[in-house]
View 1 (spheres, rainbow, N blue to C red):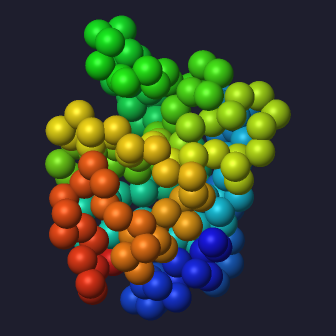
View 2 (view 1 turned 60 degrees about the vertical axis):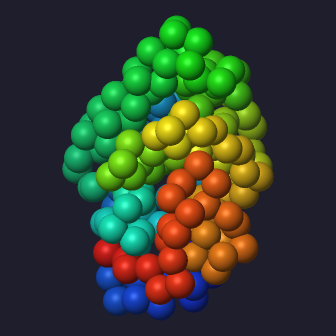
Length: 176
């Protein structure tokens, strides 16, 4: 799935689309992380400064000139995941940069976190899985891209496992 598929599933999203790329310094972000991010996330971030689905799920989108803030937020989530791992509460998942480590891309107002399960150095980010860590200690892995996962949730093709059963609902609100 692509950003266009997500925009098709969420027509209201398009009204927030930036015509020109926003100019995020991906080189800085990726060199700091030692990780190449998925192209659909990069495209989403270049055209939207914000994405909140159903007043619940908020995608972590960097702002041009504030890339260090994005990295700082990611490091906080990685630290939290490492604490869970150390307490043997991460269901075997480890934070990036571990081999097949998790990297956060969204969170919810109820404490749920969405991660990519990275494939390690040189792996294709388009092949990464989505891992949802529900606030009730439910962990679900879905073989899908970020835009494919969100599109599937909105269209009802992907069940909201580990999430509230009514999320995102038949007509979710969207902020962009």
